[in-house]
Image 1 (spheres, helix red, strand yellow):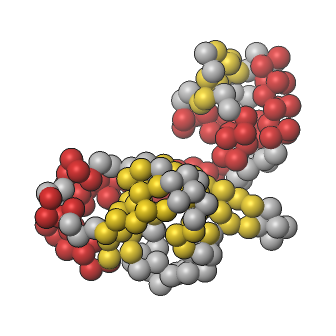
Image 2: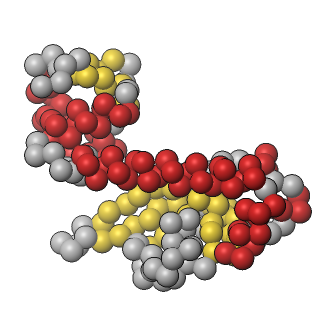
Length: 192
């Protein structure tokens, strides 16, 4: 979402600028969110820790929002929100956000669209975790993502598996001619 294309100058004034240096924390794990954050420049990581102590990182990129799933409910953050590099965020309070929804239909539609996409992706990721084999997970992921960039590290996070296990599975599927890797993208030829 590009706020400057859909908001008036007066509506942009509802936001407050926040500048974060690399590795600076915006919010700690377990804090309540009272504002919505829009990442105008840079990259933000949401870092949580599993019960086994492993860090799980989700990236927020330019043009994405932070806190839109929590601002209207009384829940705490599930991870630390840390800048990966120098970043510029725009912050808006819940009251001003509601005011903006009432004033600007396009903003409301874009906000709801972003929430809908995140909900859809989470639903698919949740369904994918119910498959017993990594091959089934991969084929399901490919079925709703069409072409996937051949990046084993990124893909292993999406499939909730180790990089090594995914690499082994990909090599086997290439050998069995079930998937094709061409120009850095993975597509499947045949399912089961």
